[in-house]
Amino acid sequence: MYEDLLNHIEKYIRLNDAERQLLVSVMRYEKVPKKGFLLKSGKVCSSRFFVLSGCLRQYIIKENEVEQIIQFGLPGWWICDHHSFENNQPSEYCVQATEVSEVAILDAAIQEDLFSKIPSLERYFRLIFQRAYDASLTRIGLEYCMSGEERYHQFAKNFPDFVQRVPQYMLASFLGLTPEFISIIRAKKGK
Amino acid sequence: MYEDLLNHIEKYIRLNDAERQLLVSVMRYEKVPKKGFLLKSGKVCSSRFFVLSGCLRQYIIKENEVEQIIQFGLPGWWICDHHSFENNQPSEYCVQATEVSEVAILDAAIQEDLFSKIPSLERYFRLIFQRAYDASLTRIGLEYCMSGEERYHQFAKNFPDFVQRVPQYMLASFLGLTPEFISIIRAKKGK
DNA sequence: CGGAATCTTGAAAGTGTTCAAATCAAGTGG
DNA sequence: CCACTTGATTTGAACACTTTCAAGATTCCG
Image (cartoon, rainbow over all chains, first blue to last red; front, side, top):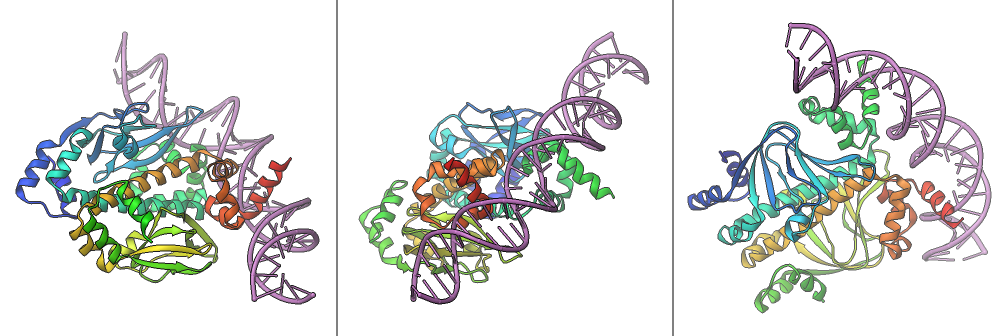
């Protein structure tokens, strides 16, 4: 059930059998229906979610009730509001499944105990966050370098299947564009 | 000399005297002149830089020779191209001092050895990167929510002294605007 | 003082948004 | 399985924001 998670971890650190077993025993599994929520703004984010299948979206709600998607969570990604998680404070984000999804859940309540029993997990997460941080800096760089249209095309080129998988208005939100504009871009392409 | 670095680390983890001493003994100190480079694109980023004083900027060079600033490094910040650092690959970034600066340097060559001698440093960096990742996601969210003008004002409000400290064209680059447009914004404000 | 770098100003052009209406698609209940 | 309702996408016109380019003013530094 947690094969993918264990494989992911073992790309970064080594685990022995006891550690593997311990880890599996403390993770929770959850199947989330389409449009099901794993986190709602105002609540404390008390878990880290590792996506096993499906797709999550993490978004914030702006003044005008508009949703701004910060990132998508595809299989192999951890999704969490780290600030809320570590400081036990209400989150500004919502995390919702865009399709039926399965997640492995690591609860805040047991994190420290788990880390003390498997210290190399600190390293695992250090490497994961280092990577994610790096990726998001790259993303920031690209955003400013490219026009909205270029952003769309580059994203569509990098994730051709994914572009079909989520509704356009979510893509628009994620890319910082309006659905109308994406519509125009796509019409152009056809020509 | 490394007081600020030690204090910073001890906000996240505890160090004993031996560890403190070891740490201090392996760090390198460097004073960088204004416009001095700590990293040039094409070179491997073989160090992490902890800013003790002054200010660094990390940027990428776009097609048209234009510099896109990804982030500034003020005292208390670590600056590094993590991907280049961990994989020993040439970096796309440049890191340059915008004013006379002092940095504490942790070299890639000794990182693993240091981590094995002070395992809690993994935790320190896990927390640092988690925070930085979080901050950069917040930044991505804000970028898309706000207009360029709003971005400028919010930044000026949050870092009133800093806005005076770096040339406007760098601010413009960091905020994803043109220097001309910042000029217009500032003129408006005066009215 | 002189030269280079930085900042300002204004006009013209581009890029993307807003709004409203029309079309298309999908899910529900009868 | 159809009719209905709701949600999602498209289209077009008018508008807003930001950039580009070129020129002039200012500041900084040796």
